[in-house]
Image (tube, rainbow, N blue to C red; front, side, top):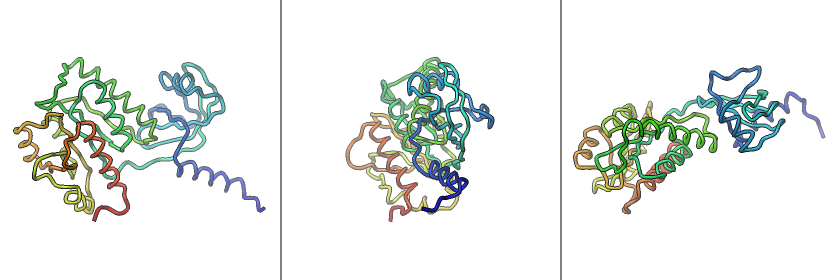
Amino acid sequence: MKQLPVATLKNALSWWFFASPMTHAHFYLPAHAWDAAGLRLAGDEARHCAQVTRHKAGDIVVVFDGAGRKAEARIEVLGKTEVLLTLLGQHLTPAPSRPLTLLQAVTKGDTFEWIIEKAVELGAQRIIPVVTERTIVRLDPREAAKKHQKWQRVVLEACKQCGQAWLPEILMPGPLEAALDHAASASVRLVASLQPHAKSLRDLLPPAVATPGTAGFAVLIGPEGDFSEREHQLLANGGWSPWSLGPLVLRSETAAVCALSILSYELHSPTPLP
């Protein structure tokens, strides 16, 4: 059997690592903390590596900066508060050309955290928590800030779990008007709707997918009690297209996962809907 040169083998292994799903544990290291001479995990990431995933010196892990860069690294020194790594190879994933934004009415209990987790796994690049007229949850500024910190942690953990190279942004919760302003740059704006004139994705998405320079997609999921008449008018005036997810009344979290699943599939499918 002919032996391949070492350099060829290294290149092949490097390609395989970045072209294949990365099954190694992922750890977050902000871009400013990267050093080609050696990488260092500290704080929560170091504790997670040493005490939760129980890695050992010599293990291979993946480090990412949340801005598209991923690296394969070997653990050299493992401590409870510090993990030292040797950089083995890195790869840059381009930013999504048509980012997906989820505007989601805040739900009760832990449901909203579950929605955030699934939104990240389904490729949402930005999540905008919305407080509508019929939203049950009401947060004062202090509660909102505390929730936002927790939601950021949920985003990071979901990003690590699914191997997302770009760390999604989650905004502070705010009123519908402010949320719509944040999503105004999206070329395609859809709102899940049970209104009689709501259209299917077959009628709404194909022209948008074929449009050159499409800046992004935004989908809005309302509260369990739906939007008020004033809010429906506000959406219509803002160019938000009513999108039917089917004849059944879905819970808010179900609608979010359904909508993002469909959009994520269509945006990455080589053959869009006819």
